Image (cartoon, rainbow, N blue to C red):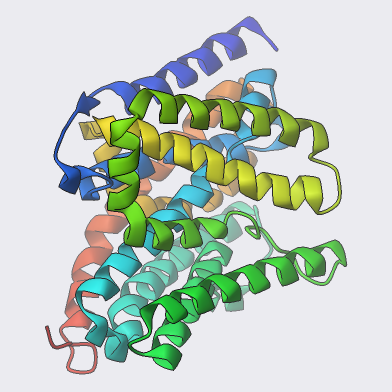
Length: 351
């Protein structure tokens, strides 16, 4: 690793720390625990892990490897905020299950379609991918996994109606079964599974929505001890995961899931006392969907246009910054389109 690469990677780490720590402050109001401001800020913090994790092989370096070994936690967190928000929304208004898909699909699918059109044109023009126009209509794999979670939630709510505990258990079991099936199909070469462990974040989010205030009260009374225990557990499990990562199922699946839960609990424990949020993290957090959908197109194009002609760490900076600019422009363009669609009679919903 060259001196230039080392310096840039250290600056990236400093930026990540500042994005999390600047604006961090204590609070005492239970209602601010995992509120929209802090969740948006944390989503913004986790974004930077995406280009680090998905950077091409020529960008690999010890600092990046150390960070991306646990990069899957970022995806786990995104799933968790989705499950958390969905569970809270449903608890406030169970009647929304009747227009569940009409409320959610337009934004997800329209955003995906528009970014697919732009992205695939870019990768075809630059020769980064083969010309396969039918792929424009296929949702992003991450979006498919999210919709599977939505489907499990929707079916549970429909089948069990007023039995909310049974509905949640059904959702947990359905997601677990899908995850395990995906894992074994992937091992058998029958499926290109990607987020079979990260998807459990959706389950953690649902659980947090139901028991979050109890967790807050419990940890608040013994904050230092609880935070310390979760931190030590995360470190111990992290070392265990690094050692047994190649081990079939137990290492690469079970340990990874438990580690993800432990790190999540540690972050939540810290958040019991400290709220997060600054202009940068909140700005990035607002663009989460667009950033997820667009960043791989940017990486593909930049590999062709720039490739290994520049410092690997500088390449990481480029593929982190350009998606933000494009995601913001897409966000501005797509927002009124989605709003117009949602006003159509079919998608309009009763409050």
